Length: 209
Length: 209
Image 1 (cartoon, one colour):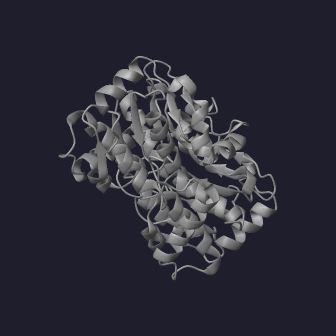
Image 2: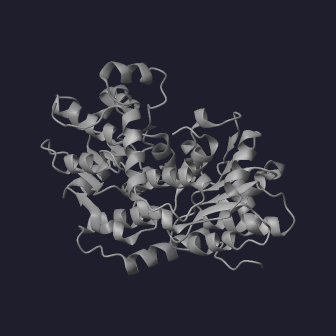
């Protein structure tokens, strides 16, 4: 053959995860988050992502328990929603992204925030006990915290991976400093993205590697 | 307000791109790829991604011309397809991902490759003159090159952003060394992903920042 490469999907996964476990320093993580870190690293190709993970000690237990009980997975972007592997979900959990709802642009104007933030207002009571996965917009994460501060429903866990140059650092630091007792996993700094957020969901949804 | 952050989407874009242009070293790139690099950086939060971009000199012209002429955008993953901003497309271009076609698992078995690679066999003649965006699977990129080597249809341009630890580096190096005269843009190394691939499409699809 012209190119010599591994063509077996299962073998690719095994070798990928073995490489990550050999190279990444996961020693700062609780055992129940190590497989989550491995999948997040797998999604971005950077083993040093492990050192930037921030988390509450209860997030692994809280997110897994919620998912097994059928919690909705609420996503800030279509990319996150489409990165969640349905076959890994323990309870045929609904995976929801409301960003493209036709009411969102007008809603954004009304609340004076981005469409990504406004889309959260359509989550409604589904937010109660849900697993929230933010893979794009810092404003969505800030607005989530604001709504909870105002007495809105609390999710079971927040996976905070907004990415970029305006508000990403600050929104994740705010999540890590949240005074609401929200279980969270996030990546410090500018890095993040839908693939990492979906990988975190996929890791928490099933123990299968 | 509890949190002080920018809530205006347009202002966030402007400030993000200004930060990227201030921090990133784009001097190694032709002028017509600088806006593409800016969007790729925007998608991943890492200004040093610019130094790892590999490209043929003709990729900006070839991809833009194809998109304006209505070329299909063929994606290896649903996440890439859902990251393409439809409003930026110049000719209502079809955005296609065949990975979830029910015939793919059997096809993968038959060709002895991954489902991501097998899905390319369903692109058919749509590959001729298309813009291909690979944001996940190294095997998809390798298989594309193999099919072209075997005399299959040639795309107008290939955006190569497979990510990870097995084959990502090698498949992108093979793309950069392709003897078929394929116009390409890719990111050297393990980094990549659907957000970067979609960002490259979005940048080439429209000059609007």
